Length: 182
Length: 229
Image (cartoon, rainbow over all chains, first blue to last red; front, side):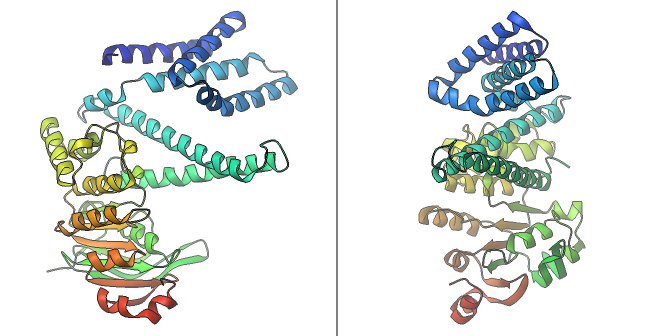
């Protein structure tokens, strides 16, 4: 796919994510379904695609439960999933290498472009840290929902946040020393 | 000629927990000095203090001037984890970025970045992201990136951590060719012997010994006391 096409596809997916955040009823269900289909198509492997959905599904479940107790709009959980899937797809489709090669410090978009590249890099770090921590948990806990399952999951999430903060601090330190950020 | 680095009575702690206490030493221009110590002895923290990333008590002077943004522009650091430094979608873009930031023309910046990658045997990987390289290659790429600033003082934090023998040899060879003062924090004694002439031994945040590397590494009781062997 050419750069222009990938850029357009990425922009289209982001626009769809924004629109999904405003939808309700059947259009929202259709948007969530389309987002899921795009996600599956991009991941290629069904198992990996479904596994990558577990954290966001859990997050949406919590939102749904809170909404049920508090009487909030139940569509919020479906919106969360649709927006997440469409943004992730936009992230994967975007022509990063080409966009980075167009960056020029003289351009007005330079700071914004660098910011997006930082976000992209950090999302990868977060994903790698999460994968590693959850794999380590999987090796220690017999049956993810068995004895110690929930407490170990809680500690794993805390550990992901702690490690992510540490990585963010180091990343910022390295970029600040290199004169990329102040 | 003034020293590249002068550290005087430097102390640092997290809350009431001291990490570094009363550290003083100098590094001459073009001198290669090792910092050795067991895990948690304060090696990385010392490098972070010198680089101005942590605020410590005491004085750090770089090339005869107090540590400031302009004097720190003459130093570069290679972090323990190369992913902290390399984040662009292609390696050559990572290396070109500091030049572009300094106002160098795009074509020249990319040409110099490509040449530097070739110096480090990474020319075949110029269009790949760092994440697709082996750890040894990423470490060399991080070193190449640090050199894009033409530093006069190079700080290296655990450069051989998790590297195999061949990668360590390649890294040591690359370091030998760099005409800058070097401060290398490691607990890899073989690498220290290869790349430094003088070594500081840190124990519980204090300098327990400062002397020629060969002499210090021959002192087994001292190394044993420091938890290094």
